[in-house]
Length: 172
Ligand SMILES: Cc1cc2nc3c(=O)[nH]c(=O)nc-3n(C[C@H](O)[C@H](O)[C@H](O)COP(=O)(O)O)c2cc1C
Image 1 (cartoon, rainbow, N blue to C red):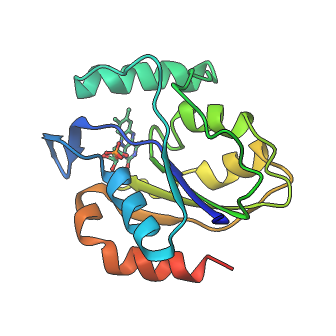
Image 2 (cartoon, rainbow, N blue to C red):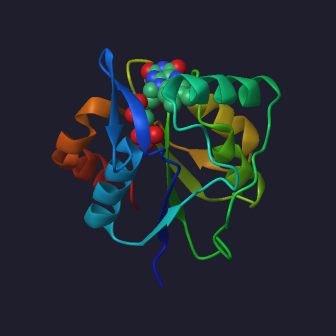
């Protein structure tokens, strides 16, 4: 059984790319997550919300802002059965309004991460990790939260070499 889990939230469809809106079939974070799993092995798990966000980019940013303001915990379609077997959890997400989407916190609330290492990675259009590392530490006080990898969303496709090297350094 593998001791590494790569879990991520990623939104396909309309997204913002360095000044223009484009529609993408595979989310930026999803791409990076796949590079990590390819590099270090282990299991890959996608977090999906029960209620889909608006296809329209601007509408989605408004929904996300409302969820952030109310500190919501949007329901997820499914969760891993258990995380007991994993020592290292790579946790990926887009930067939404300066931190991870609230759905990521739904996942964090569902398990006890005491003694585990959480290794965050975040795609974004310039805000980097934002406050997400601090917010994850607060949500999972018993976990060791490594410093994260920030990738510009529009560079995600070209990030395999960098991502794989970083991932390898973060597995015990
Ligand atoms: C709701 C929403 C809020 C966003 N907020 C930010 C932000 O505050 N800072 C930033 O740099 N990028 C922001 N972005 C851009 C995304 O972080 C970026 O496009 C990311 O690569 C999307 O990843 P995904 O395709 O895996 O969902 C936002 C995008 C969305 C949809």
